[in-house]
Amino acid sequence: MGIVAVYGWSKGNPAKYLSGVDSDGKFCGYDAGYGDYNKLYFPDISSTANIQSMYVCIKGGCPVADGKNIDCKTTTSFPNCNPGGSIIRYNTTQYLGKYCLPKESELPASLKGSYNAIVSWLQLDLISQWISDVLKAWPILVISLFLALIFCLLFMYLIEWFAAILAWVCIIASFLFLVALGFFFWFNKDSDKNKNSNNSTYNIIWASLCWAGALAIFLFVCCFCKALRIAIGVIQASADFITDTKRILLVPIAGFIYIVLFYIFWISVAVFVYTIGNITSSGGQGKRVEWDNTTRRAWYYHFFGLFWINAFLDAFISFIIIVAASTWYFSHGTEIEGTAQVYKGLRWIWRYHFGSLALGSFILAVVQAIKYTFEYVRNRLNNANPTNAALRFILCLVSYCISCLNRCIKFITKNAYVQVALTSNHFCLSAFNAFILILRNGARFIFVEWISFLFAIMGKIMVISLICLINYFILTMWTNISDDLSSFFPVIFIAGVISYAICTVFFDVFSIAGNTILQCFILDYEISNSMGRGSAGHQPPALKKFIKQIRQYKRDRGDEVSDSHSDRAEQYEQK
Image (cartoon, rainbow, N blue to C red; front, top):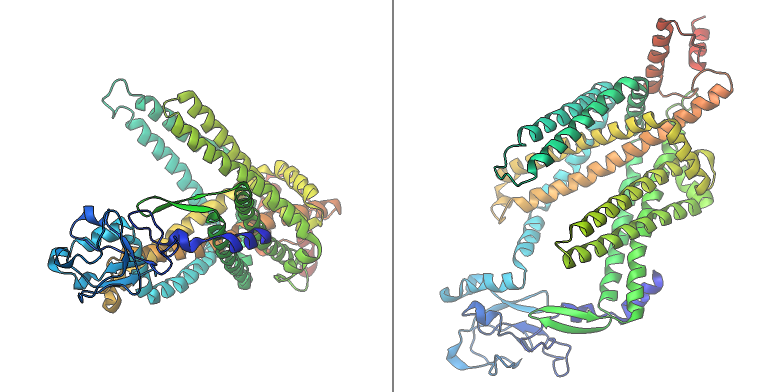
């Protein structure tokens, strides 16, 4: 990718690609004889037709309504740059260093509507207004950032205190939602009066699927209640881990900054590589670039590098969290109980596991590249054959299979990193061990993933809704800012995006921690059983409480239950 970057920076020409083009298709500032004529000017804006057909390259500063001659390159549609009084002159200002646009407030009354026509034709109006509104409201966005951090942390404490209640609320809500959605489809099966329509059949199918899903949830909860209780304990332990180790949140934040820097680098190189070759006008202000084979291969490699480096940085961040969560788990029952070693994961990566992370992220990048390449081919084929139902069905089926493969590889890879941290095996063996572990403890993994997902959805909805609502009230009261805005929407939208990013950081840590703690518990339980201790020896308080309840339930039922390591320790203390 470094070689591709040097190739792009040395041969690319984004300035020409972004420059103005006159009505004869000449590039301002770049074509022969146009070197000093580097700005695009609209001499006659009396009508939309003239705006879209008469535009010239000019030399020097942007023109003003002072009657002085304009030095421009004439075109077929505009052979005289200074026709006298037949065209109304107006004051202009420079925009993006390439365009001379009218000063809207200083336009004559007869030309007031022309500014919007120019900006709309150049597609600069909405984006420019939004950027301006966001820049004016930056203090409110800073407030939103800190409020999102506070609300997410409060939600973690809420999970820590009421994990069992919230878990059951989410499960019951999922069940009721599917039942209600099934009734919605059922009652709307006869809403289409067209007798030849298949909507009735589709609604019945969707209603059946919703009810089948609700029944599956009910049966799964009834049949695997023990696994559910352990999963709830794992979820609560994950919240304990985050509230005990708040510095762990700096890891994804720092990782997010690195990812942003990488994206800036990637986009910069992509712009330069994209503009290597012969740049020509495609009509209006449109351009096209003709690539050779070398540039095309460089672009493909650079595009694949986006998937690989992005997956690697994600693995890098996840592994540090995994090591911190595992050291926190196994610290229980020792003198340093509840202590997580956040920086150990960083040392382990560079010393032992860099290759494992690189291999895992490479496999994931290959699958993602296949997925997006197929989606591109699928869109091309669908557009070429819009009425071929069989082709659309096959393409949809293949797309679903590839998406399933991508999700499976991503899930196994994530669990393989946990095994790499716990056992120090290489990636392939760790991935195999993770796969076998998931098969042996499928119900536990399903419940942990499901409840973590539901908690993440609930937390994001609560935090984002609160942030957007608070922003609206702040804007209505902070008139010094709101009076200068064209709309509240861009500010509230960006505040929602910021709060979503913060929530994603929190709940990604939460999900990774939950998965890690579950695998630590299973490993701890198996080691303890092999040593004849009866139960896991390093249980956090949240898990210990649920394990005791399960063991007491078995004793009450008359089952023979051996004392665990912690039970014997408590009996010894009581004696």
